[in-house]
Length: 303
Image 1 (tube, rainbow, N blue to C red):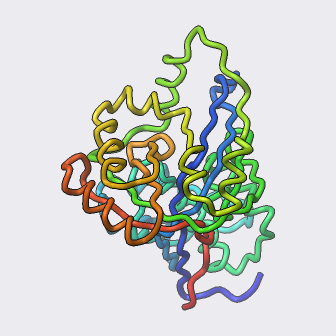
Image 2: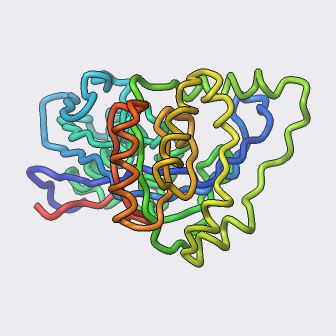
């Protein structure tokens, strides 16, 4: 152990899935995935400070929708890390929320990864990186990528990561009213797939090549999300949002992960501003966010 610090803040990115290939339901209820993640420059910050007991607070857009009890992945991360170290999780975790809540951009997973890294630094544990990634996988399928960032292919249930090359891409995200439950979207996927043979999920070679080359047109042609039909089934109005963004000048559009946030790939920053304005004028979303990718994973900020 090294010396403990007075406070540690970690910045952590949102993600977009440029490909989400979903296999059939496994006996454990999960699905095998081929999940091509991109971290985007839209961040939450989690600050860990010493406290008498484990507490969580949150501020920012839709903070009232964030659970502040032990179901919050940030709290669970602190508990697991403390248990492994044989110490009490005596920490206050404050989440400065900017990633859409329940929006398919891994905001909760990001907070879990950020809290894990913040507590490790606060408590001076110096936990090996590989062990931190293992704890992330224990917390949830998307949490390891939130720690790692950049661009990666996630297999298994999404937690087994292989880094991939990625050029710079520009995005607009449309935030919907209300959230969508990821388990509910997977249940709808299973319902819609009933009676059909579901192929084994595989990463698209065309998509990986487009990512590596930084070719936005080619990436737009290859974007795919097997959960999109399920998300649209549960929230049909998202189809209007997708159409509004494309009509506004986006190269391509898709539901981000399990939704209901929708993602729009654009040619450059100037086009991003135009697409965001078109989406807001369309009345089909609550807000828009502009971002670029790839972005670094969870990072301890200078104190």
